[in-house]
Length: 262
Length: 80
Image (cartoon, rainbow over all chains, first blue to last red; front, side):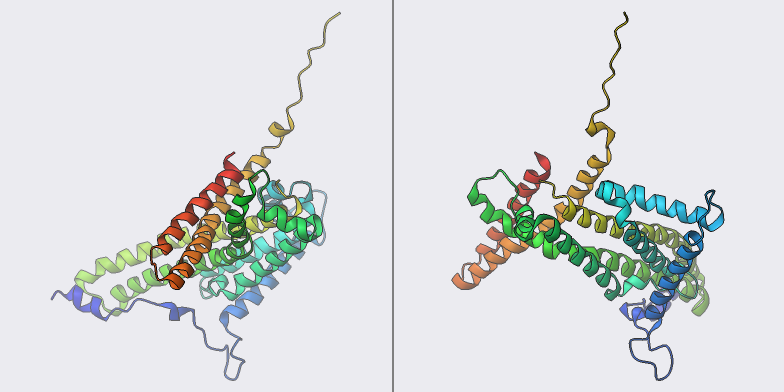
């Protein structure tokens, strides 16, 4: 048995338990944990940033207003306008807050000492997905009528009647159950898996370089550290991408309810 | 008298490339959802049938039928 195998047998990879946090202090309610605190902190930071950028706007933007307007333009041009067209401006408050809050929550995953992406607890993305789901159905019924909404959703026009019996259930399940479900799970699963990957590679680096440094294990430890750095960069890309996608899908669902395609 | 050269304005379609983006994104995000729904609905019916009749072949028949119908639905909505 090589020394490498000896130490490798003692190594335990971090599992789902790294997402479990105790209450913040002795006697705190069980729900008051680090992710909850970070969720609130994220909301406060987004409020503060928006306040400092837009509370006192100048004709020639400087400093925070400049950054805020760049963020606004990005969300408006890349997320809102393609799906909402002329209604884009009306939905910008929702989409902008959604995008930056999720982006910050995700970004917490790589901020030293915080190091927990809030959305890796599925309850948080579920709340957003449910809000968008309710808005989607409300707007659909408001703009297309109760019957019209379900008719437009489930019965694409121009088909022989028997075909509808086969296809309508698929449309129903896809639009009303699978879509909101994947909307929340996509964000959750990406953040969960990303955090687990980062935790794993840093644990490898820490274990083989500091806890049990052996000539054979050292290479593995260095690999762990290099991978941690590389994966951190990759995670930041994913964090941005998932915030973008979540907001984009929200705009897509809202736009679909406002303007039925057919 | 010089005849004015009338340059036709770009068509509505050309001026609004975002419509293409919307359709594409719509399709890209709906297709997996449709395929999954097709499998669940018709595979589920097949599972029920096999449970009632004891003929296990209904499950794969339902799943394949569901994928086929979902693919047909995707074709109807985005492929035509």
